Image 1: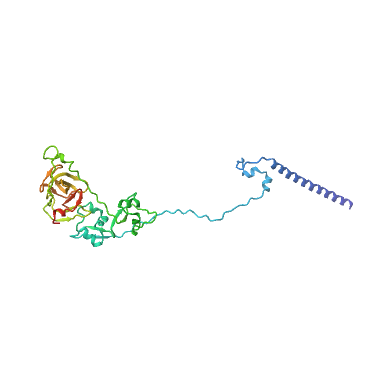
Image 2: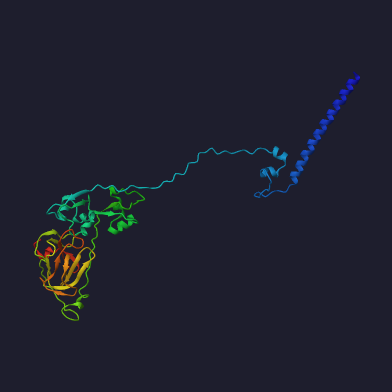
Length: 353
């Protein structure tokens, strides 16, 4: 019994010694780690850490320090971020609803306009070809009738509300205020569509012939400057017909008289020819006579011309033949009278219209 007790005492003593040695070893390693961390130079906040593998944090710390380091909290954003939804303004196209009218025999621009409660100039606003085709206002022709006075504008690339308003001398608000135009801010316009310009009047191009002074030196009556020939101040019909196919109005600055092609045309009064040839502005073969007293007469759509610029003609002299040239849809003569360059109604001068 005494020997057994001694053996157990010796074993217990060895265990205590082993435990003490282990604790001393652990303390030594902890102290060594703390000293190494204290002696390591600080690293700049943004300095790069060179490693041969693993993450930078693993390379910078001893294995035990990495194992013992507290875990950093992981922040997870569970908020719902709204996706960007780009909004592009498209706009609406104009939506017009126009009436049409088929011209009947005996109709005049003023008469047609009165039927629909609009001005005659509005016929031109909806039918611009009326100012280009002198015989368009004929029986059977279909016209667009605008609901209000104004101009139906064909939108071109580059057009803006401001440029259109300036062109017709109206305000932007006037155009926007017409509901069928469907204009909403930022007021997008669509080329190849039409918008209504309330209260506007379509401009009519007026061609100006050469001056009397520019042709007097080429007179056929002799050399030098031709004498100034002054008309009688009275006018006669240029043709022997009263078959009017169109009368004078804002969109048509003369009268049209229909008759067979090749019919003789005479000077309505005495004067000097200032133009005799092809006119590119719709008149076709044209003769212009300046009467030396502020008056000029025009003879358009001729099939032949029998005078030259600078030539003096007298009232009733043959000057050419009727035709169907230029902007014309049938044989006729376009007869025009101007006083001091202003277009006037020929019926005031020849009567019988």
